[in-house]
Figure 1 (spheres, rainbow, N blue to C red):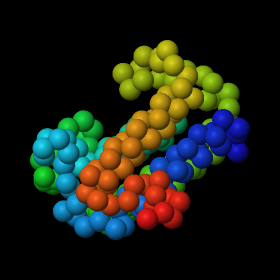
Figure 2: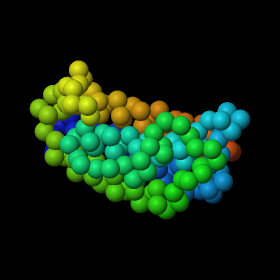
Figure 3: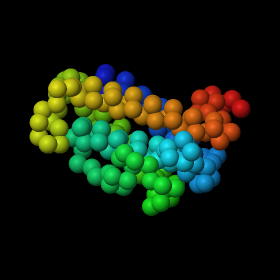
Length: 167
């Protein structure tokens, strides 16, 4: 495996492991709890949003992949989770997309990561593929922080507490 891809993959793996820590002790009602007086995102939306952007990252890596939920998790959190898939379905799609991300990053040489890439409209990006993927990894970490905030608001252990066996 390439050096830069390996480093990125380790970051994506932390988010992958965090999925189960985020959901396995909460029921659907708590997973759909929205912050900011019911106007903000839920844990379920955060995870769907991360999955949505993982698909975009895969496209940047050249994968011909469609997002499993279209634009459902792109920007706005759906009111009360209307139309959201089941947790089992989201988990299955998460596992599939992560496995594809593992394969794609392993197959991408460092020189390709250091090059710019084509945007969906055909223009050349001013950023390198590595910079775009680093952004996606940061974006995931930010959303997992949102998940932790909601978990703590609900009285559940944070993701760090779950990861390190505290509480």
